[in-house]
Image: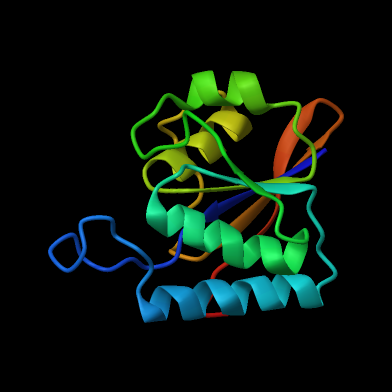
Length: 149
């Protein structure tokens, strides 16, 4: 079983736009990441996002390259939502990409890997993607890629 945890691309400031859509740099970093993942042959069943504008835009970019545009919104993926509650509802979703925010995405990774949300064993940069795989009832990090690579 594999899941992908993606952090949205860089967003504009709240002063510039309260909805905080992706900045041009944010769009570029997510497009580069999506292209790289497509080049690697990565395909996902679906891309799920928090519903916030920057996550939605990032999810759309990823989904065009990785799953024919199949995106949806999930409750519980916002920055300060409960990772435990979210993971209990989502842990059986195989080959799915979740697009969200800090601190949620890093806490979710920590919870999946260690059963504790505050250990934070990885840092996910804007536009970055973490691949987690379950093997023999344990989760481990398969890879982590940041846009600057």
